[in-house]
Length: 140
Image 1 (cartoon, helix red, strand yellow):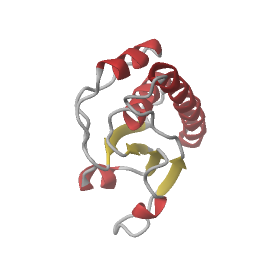
Image 2 (image 1 turned 90 degrees about the vertical axis):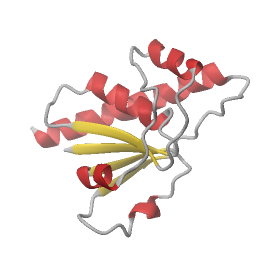
Image 3 (image 1 turned 180 degrees about the vertical axis):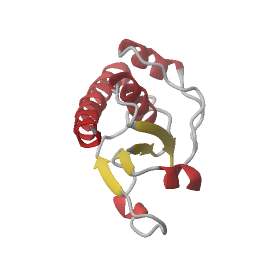
């Protein structure tokens, strides 16, 4: 099973989902990548600090969605509320399952940025744990 985590910019939500997936997943049959619809700017210090609290490291340079990454995936997980699922409905090729986690991004200048990002990360971590458990059973 190949899982592609996608968010708008691949700065935080999909990037942290991938990092948490790698931390949780022990099954070599489950693989994952992350990308954004639009390649965002490098991650910022406060994003990396929150990730460190969850014992993961974020990639500094976000990746944009490519045809190769999309075609690689068996499952697309939209980690956000700002990408419509229908965007993936009419892409030619092998049909793949698309899951949407409607998780709102934290704005960089939010006064409670750190706490809101911690809460967002905890939500993503819980969803990643469920995803790993589900697909670990299916690939066993």
